[in-house]
Length: 357
Image (cartoon, rainbow, N blue to C red; front, side, top):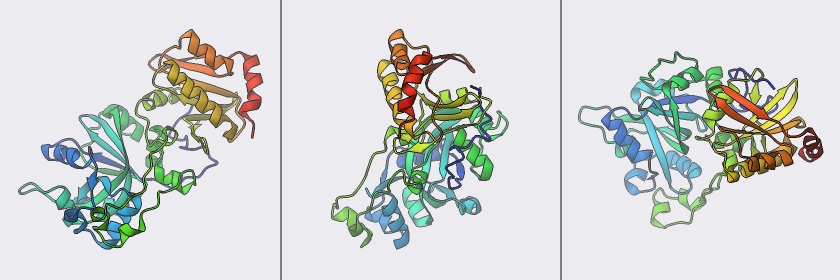
C-alpha cells in the first residue's frame, strides 16, 4: 500500500472537519533569561490563584483561567509587545511549539490568552533594562519532544538550515500541515467534536478571585488517556518517517475508542495502523488491543490492520499479531520499511470482527 504527501494529508480523513488551528513557534531556551522563564513557568505549574497573581488579573481573565484549569494551576508562556499583532490572532486550542538547543523541545496546547503586563511581570520579572512580556497564555497540555531543527523546518516548508531565530505564528494550510505531520491532536478539538468533555469548574472559585486558594475548594481535574495524547513523543518520529514513504494521503480518525495513528484509503483497500516505539510484548499487546478497538469504528470497513514498530518482532510477538490477522511493519533502514503479512485465512476470519457494529 502506498503513502502520501502529508502536506495534502488531513489530520483527519476528510469526513471529520476540524476547526482551524494556528501554530506558534516559540523560541524558549536560548538566553539565560528565557531558560529561567522555562524552569519557572513551563517545567512546573504555577498556582495562579495565589493573591500575588490573582490580584493582577481582571475578573474575566481569572474566570477564563479557572474554566480551563479547574485545579487552580497551569503552565504559562508569553510574548512582548513587539508581537502584539501576531498574538492577537491566537486562540484557545492553538498549538505552541517550543524550540531551543537546535531542536523542538516541547509541544503545548494554548489555553487562556490575554494581555496583562502586571501578571506577566509577576511571573517573569524583567531584567534591568529588559522588556516586559505583555501577552500571556496558559497551556492546557505540555508534552516533551525531541525533533531536530532540520526536520522541523522541513515539515514547515522552510529550508533545512533555518535556525528559528524568533517567534512565528503560522496559519492556514501551512499550520494544518504541521499539525498533521506531527500527529498533534488538541484537547480543545476533541471537546468540540464531542470526544472529550471539558471538566466543569467549581462555581465557588468564580465568586472571588482568591477564594479557590483560601478555601482549599475541591476541584475537578482529569488525566488524558494515551489514545488522545496531544503529541506522542516516542512514536511520532517513526510515524513521520513511515508516512514519508507513502504515495497516498494518510489520515486519522477519532472514535469512542480513541484516536488511531494512521488511516489509509488506497487502491489496495483500507488500512488502520498503530505505531509503537518498542517491540516488547507489552507494547505489541497494547497495539493489538487498540487496533481491535478502533477497527469497528473505521470510516470505511478495514481490509487490513497493522502494527508499525522500529525493529523486527520476536516470533512470539509476531505470532500473536498473525493469530488475529494483523500485519507487522518494521523499519529496516532509514526510510525503508518491510511488511510481514498475516496469513490470509486469519485476516478473512477476523475481518468480520473488525467491521462489526
